[in-house]
Length: 133
Image (cartoon, helix red, strand yellow):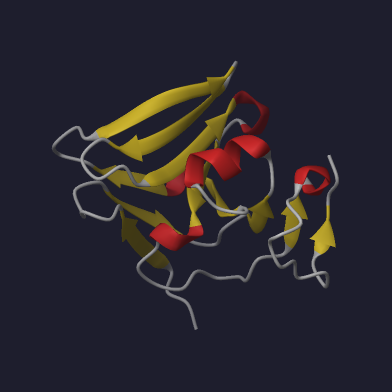
């Protein structure tokens, strides 16, 4: 069972967030930028309505990196944790790395995004919906 509000943080705990559920979606992203940004075979993102998301970063340690035109990725400058993604393509949303949450969210991963760039050394749950593009 999930809570109506969940929280999370970076590894050092200095960049914290809280969000109201429900989430919009949860998916594994296999794009090359996500793989490099997280140093993993894929990253699992949770899509949230930006207006329900609240950042608690009193030390201004959250830094944003413009990874491509109209898109940025947020990370803690103290411990390096990769936390957030925002893009003009999904205006009004913030994408949060599932591993940064302190409690379970309201859904399990539902799909694979950018599957055409997946790596063959990462096990894949083929029961999930696959978006090639």
